Image (cartoon, rainbow, N blue to C red; front, side):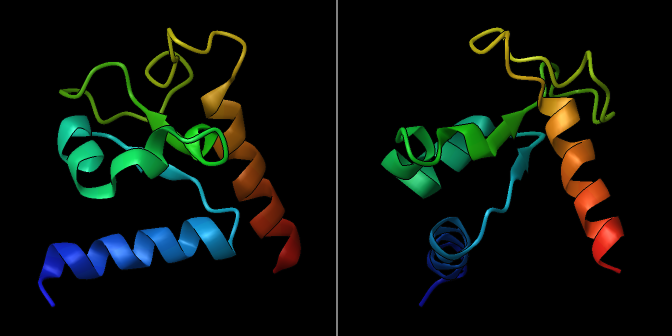
Length: 89
């Protein structure tokens, strides 16, 4: 099994078995090619978060704004996950 196939299996497993979010900071097209239709399925599309500017890797509310989903606050989604993890520890 190649590295990319193994990576895809891990991501699909995480999509199916957890509520993990995926931050796609660069190479969105390569992610889409690797993961395929699952990235855009109604079931999983809200779990892939994209930055607006691939040259800027800063996690900020402005950089994580999705023009296709203006009502979805991706930055707040990340903060919520981090806060949940903090309360578990």
